[in-house]
Amino acid sequence: MDEDQQDEIPYLPRDSIKPGQLQEALSNLKFLGDDPFLRMQAVNLDIVDQFLTDLECNVLRELHREERTPPNAFFLNAQSQMWIFAVYELIRTWDERAKDIMKWAKNGGLQHKLTHLQSEQTDFLHFGREIRIDQLKTVIADPTIVGLLDRQLKHIHVQYERLTYIRVSLAKHQVSGKSKSVALNPGYGRINMWCGSLDYAMENGRVHLGTISRRDIADGLRALQLDEEPPSVEDLLSFDEFMRATPPTNFPVDDKPKPTD
Image (cartoon, rainbow, N blue to C red; front, top):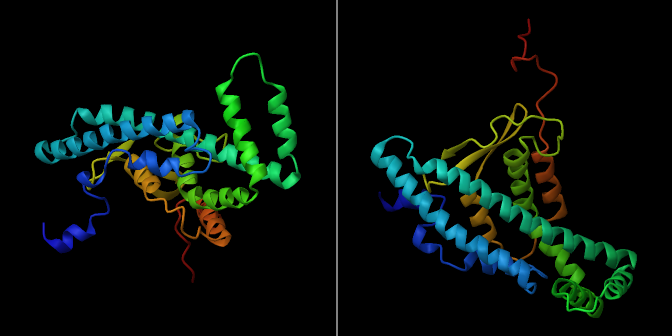
């Protein structure tokens, strides 16, 4: 493969993905990195990411060699979905906590929540509650943290929404945001010919919104630049509108406009 073709590959080489990179990126989220239990989940995701990245590379090599779907692709599909569920739950937990803190800061409820947590203290050391108490004390002492959380939520918004979209398809067999819907091909993944990860379709009825793979999710999180300016509100609203895409209603069922005289 010549240099020009190499530059077109949309994924980093395997040896560029080092252990700890994913865990470090996730731990840069405020109140995730300083929570040992959330950080433990980030470490777990990083460890399994390394394993799955190797498996993806092996599946792709075997596909090229045998010119048929390798048996390991089925194991890869199972493990990829489990990893997606796990990373979704970690990001969802952090997202919920960050938004709660912002809400309490806005409505003056931080001290009330802190007092409530302190009143629940028992006669033994409750590590999880102590962590939450310390976090609330930190925000009360430094209100600028609320702005930091807002910026970080903007940074991760696109990644989280795409992750949520495919998680709903894989876990609930529905289209995200449509509780009574039926997903088109939930759980069906095609081997990505660049990296070996499985591409899952993101669809909204008759509208195809592209594909997403486990590797796309991991790379997107690793690439978070939380120190840079976050996307604008207008850009995020535009993205949300795209993800809510619906098929046109002014065309007949076959999607072909009727010819005019």
